[in-house]
Length: 126
Image (tube, rainbow, N blue to C red):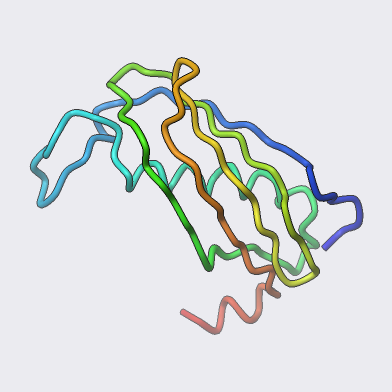
């Protein structure tokens, strides 16, 4: 990784809940609310935004661990803010803590761990 990443570094991602983010199974909407699947996707996205500027040309990040506590619902059209902060990092991994809000209401908390690997190692996986 390139130098400069620090513990406490933060990034923010704002999304608007749309119908494609609803909880669904087998193409049927279970409820028209922001799904945990979409929540995890966006948690990984904001965490990737943290590492992206620090990756070397031959490196890539890979999500290896996600912990999430989905606390409250977000309706269609709600703006949801993801706040990610670096809590731990080494040359091989970065851990971010995440807080998620909608209209100042806490929607979720969690952590994302990303392994930092050479691209050639990742390419051997597929």
